[in-house]
Image (cartoon, rainbow, N blue to C red):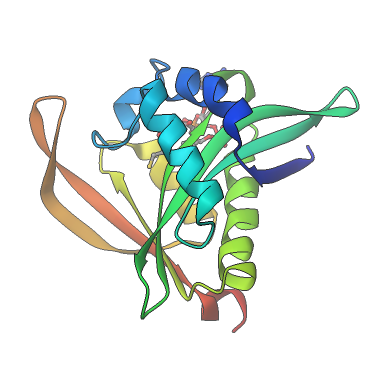
Length: 173
Ligand SMILES: CC(C)(COP(=O)(O)OP(=O)(O)OC[C@H]1O[C@@H](n2cnc3c(N)ncnc32)[C@H](O)[C@@H]1OP(=O)(O)O)[C@@H](O)C(=O)NCCC(=O)NCCS
């Protein structure tokens, strides 16, 4: 399936709000991630205003001769001196799951962030209970770097986070 990613615009906000609040998505997102309309709009506007500092992206698939929205992912600048970006907010709409779209999108995202935006390190964390996301991260070339033990309170419990990263040298050894 043909996949592309593009920076989200204000016209994508309704799609993003509805996806982030899906029953099969919301429990896996960082509790701190904005998912109300105002917060999502603010994140989209910030992404458009300062494209090197944060990004909200839409994942699209080619369908019936056009492009259909299938998911989202995001990044934010974590460390300017060392050119580190934190990735997050990944979700594929349930209608498009099971085709490894997230893997294709992650590889496009990695190349954009490293080669177009000149980041050197991309890092992300998954809740340890999110086995699908962990399998996806491993398949997509991110390297597992460790466990943050009981780092976050989610669903009324302290949960571990699994840390992954990809560095520029992984793409051009
Ligand atoms: C993690 C995620 C992005 C992977 O999406 P993907 O590219 O479709 O990944 P896959 O192709 O491996 O499919 C994921 C699973 O969905 C299953 N699936 C297939 N059709 C489905 C459907 N209609 N609804 C729900 N799940 C479906 C697949 O069988 C697969 O299960 P498995 O991993 O147990 O084999 C996606 O599962 C998702 O959006 N999850 C919720 C948000 C989330 O966890 N984000 C990551 C935060 S770190």
